[in-house]
Structures are given as structure tokens and as C-alpha cells.
Length: 166
Image (cartoon, rainbow, N blue to C red; front, top):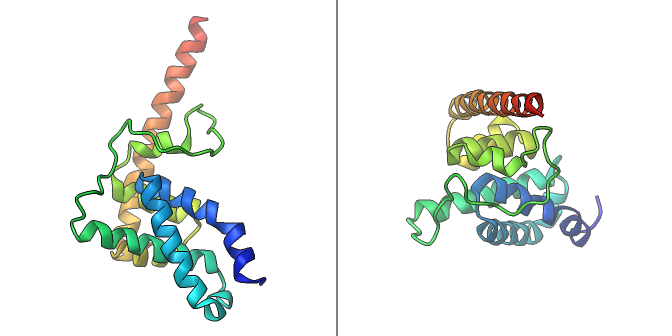
């Protein structure tokens, strides 16, 4: 693996984007990512030897966000449905952005889906990052995927009806 500067340049934007999708607050995502990368820098020889150093950074950043929320930081307010997270991800086939689809999920489910599927963390790493059990992660994933299927199916039905009227 290359040096820390290369690691940072290659991964910073992806980490911020993933955290912003998970927590719904780009500013907090940037703060958490910066702190996590600073910790990675201080421990670089050990972090560089890890199988997935970026996974470690994501877990550290997610833990930071969790600590901010746990400390009753009144400045942090998770966005509700309809609040937009600026993200430049490709549009999904249903013409809705990933962030729009994820906005309909409760915060824990949204974070679980992002960390597990978009960040490719293991169930154990997601549990560690969110401070819960693996069973809770699996339950949240199951509920989130069920909700996403319903939402995407409804959207596809609406698009088909719209095309039929044309």
C-alpha cells in the first residue's frame, strides 16, 4: 500500500459521501471523516497493514458521529424525509437518486444499508460502528430492504402508468 497522502486522496471523497448518505448531514460527515483520517494518520503503520483500511476509517467515523448524537448534541438533527443530501451518485434505474431512496428510511436502517452495501462492511463491522449487536444489524437490514422493495415497486408502478398514458 502507498503512503497516507495517497490513501487520503483516493478515499476521502468516498468516505464523506458514504457517511453523508448514512447520517443525512454532509457537514457532520466531513467533520467525522476528517477526525477518522487524522486517527488513521497517527496510526498509519498499523492501519496500512489492515486488510481494508478504508473500512477502519468508516467505522471510526461512524463511531464519532454516534458519540456526538449520544452526547445529546442539540446541534445535530437528523434530516427528515424530503431534506436533501447533496450527492453526486449516479441515478438508480427508477430515476431517483440513492439519497432520495434512503431518505425514506429511519436513521438506523439508512446507516445500516449504507455501511453494509455501499461501503461493503461486514455485519460485524456495521454492528461495531453502530454500537449494536449483529442481530440488530440483520434485523435493520431486513426491515430496510423490505421497505426499499415496496418503495421501488410503487415507483415502478407509477412510472409504468405514466408511460401508458402517453
